[in-house]
Image 1 (cartoon, each protein chain N blue to C red):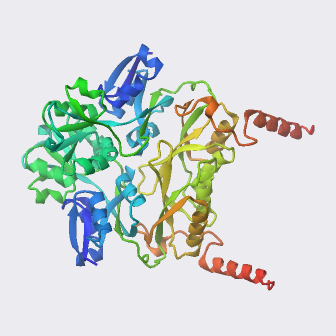
Image 2: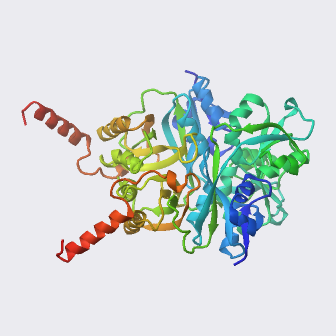
Length: 310
Length: 310
């Protein structure tokens, strides 16, 4: 397998910074791609071992480009996640003052995270979207725009200086990234794991979605993300991207997935992988009756009943 | 009240075309605004009677800018919805051939709807985002880009011609727009109505969302949209924008909203309004036991029991 990771480039973006926090990234060649789609296509085509892309952030929610790529096409699997706190710096050519700034740029995803800051500090600046935050910095270097919102780490690369740092409209602004590869055995259970699936309802009826969620709730499984995505069959037709606490080797999770497989039109397993937000010792206690031991004991009891030995 | 409707401008976009399908638009001054935020702010400030903005489309799902504006800030209410089929034309300066096109532009929301067409027909064209589809057409007129994706109706306004029409990656591509005003009495029940609410969970626990949806399911109410939106309190913290079938004056809907009011941290009522997708005679039959008459009869029966007269 080629020892390279594709990632959403260019170099010098938050994605690269997040990727470099993974120990395994140190032993791989890291190759920037121009889009989430092209990075994931490289994995599907076998050109890269895995791809590292943003999937959720605390301001915009699920990142729809990534979710839509995972929902459709050849199946892929998530193996790792990384959480990165996001704060923007306002990068300018050396000597530029705040009052000189007429145009600002950044990736469109940055806009909701700096909107209030802009309104308060640069109410008349014209926003122009860039292909990435790093590309915005490059365009400032070239003189096309006056200022770019990007990571402070991008300043030196483009010969810019940070006029302002730590810009973020929401406290605790974070982006979640995932390392995505071709389907294989999931990462081993750590005790603080997350399982991602996509669900398609069999038909649309009152209580349909409640019943799907009941497969998790009945087994004491907490949900961490529920993001509806259009199926492409017209307004009101959605599938559901769900992140649930636990690992597919946990009995409660395995049983919930079996339940979903029975009642859904389609279930796509997107992987079980270690959670980046908590360590195993920090995971919330299981609800009574939902541990592996209790599932095993209950299965034994039913088997004995079936055998007349209760 | 000022007799004007704000709408997401500029002129010549799908939004204006959709707005003009509303009979009441004929008697109002229609004023374009540069953003969803500014159009809704005009309503909140009393400068406009109502604002007309996109809220959902069949390719991208819920339009997050609009949902986030309705979720936060001074309360607003939805009074009408309009569904518009979306197909793009590729607009160029007269005489341009497909092989001449090096750069294409449109609003970022258009990109997922034309992505496959682009890949098949203009794989090397560079995409540049425009503030709106109409603005993209203007930039083509000015010579800044070679081609713009926009409604075919925009061609004549900008002296362009349509090199290709009816471009849409997904069949049945539709956008849903809403007319939003300050809170007042909802539009009267028509028999084919929709009720929109935003729900905030009291706390995060296994089954929490299932229980919220149970308030609808228990009363036979079908959901048409469930879109999670970040609360701003960090990754994994979401509120839920929900569209449900029925009108707040339907007893089943009123009782579901009362249930949600009891169990949620917060409920924001966003309005009950006529559905644009079906006429009253086309609405699916109610589940047994969920009609107004059955709710009334059941309430009478409980009252008689409380009185010892059953």
